[in-house]
Image 1 (cartoon, rainbow, N blue to C red):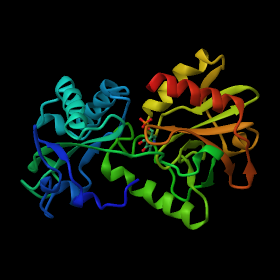
Image 2: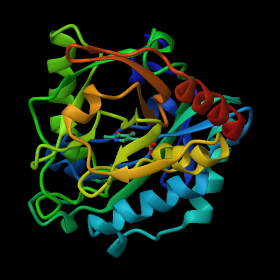
Image 3: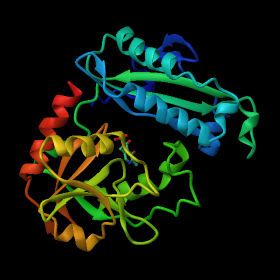
Length: 289
Ligand SMILES: Cc1ncc(COP(=O)(O)O)c(C=O)c1O
């Protein structure tokens, strides 16, 4: 990934329906999204000129916006947003890109009643290679200090900016301990996800992943579940505990940014990059290209 700070880049950002020069796509510091975390966003990838699951991502963005009561003030326009995402890549001459649509409440008002501030929308795109450097050999995960709350405590289906506070804290913890990322448990002690990806494990030949009942139901996670029968693997959504992961023969994480990344270590348990992970990676490349 380029080291140029994001506010100093060249190119174009789609902002409230128009393309503006990248450096001019700014907001005021008195901004509701900044102060109260009232933003929803997506991460999508374009491969070889085609956005993978553009519609599914924009539908999840719409769901996130609805969950934050934003649909009262912004027109949900899946078709228009999909077109704008493609045009953003074209305008920036990108064929392979990471795309970041975001809706946030602006500077029209401040206060806990978020509806005083109007939703705004932007779409930016840039080149972003592998999310995990060295990920081909597998990443290491450590049990996270912060847990996923019960579904009655957060709008967990929404990809909401404010909900990422504990994800960041968990990631800091992992990196400080010399690990790449985390295994986040939920309030019951069940395995949930990573800080920015979902988790799969091969146990007794079956590909298993936790039920997404209190964390983000990743679009890559759903794709992996669709691809499993195609590569001849039985997959199931079930309760997974840390002890189950200790018995796994393979573990990998899934995400739009992470794609299919093998896991080589969880706490003290080590794993090899195995045949199911390799087959899933191959199937994912085929599906996305
Ligand atoms: C917390 C979290 N879980 C899971 C995922 C995977 O979601 P997706 O596959 O839709 O990118 C992400 C991706 O951004 C994430 O941030």
